[in-house]
Image (cartoon, rainbow, N blue to C red; front, side):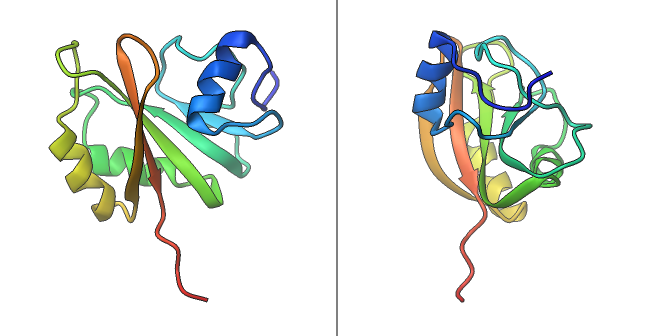
Length: 130
């Protein structure tokens, strides 16, 4: 399995919206079929440039999920939290994301629609002063 972002048209369009570039190592936790590219899973065991974390309301504690997503993330990398849009089965309340992110040590930066059913929220670790 390739561990880098692919070059298919769908992956490129999605990757552009999420700031994913060819050659980046992207880890996928959870699952859906919106992005048509090979990604590494939770057992990868090496650092990754970005994490796509698919999350539904009944997946458990969001803070725990975000902390787990940080495990292999390289400094300066980002987590894209992918959740069903409002009104879709399993949608996650925006207030839950806003509350969970800082507890996990993350800041919320951007939200993007990724398909008719899913949205993505970019989360990053706050920069520490040098």
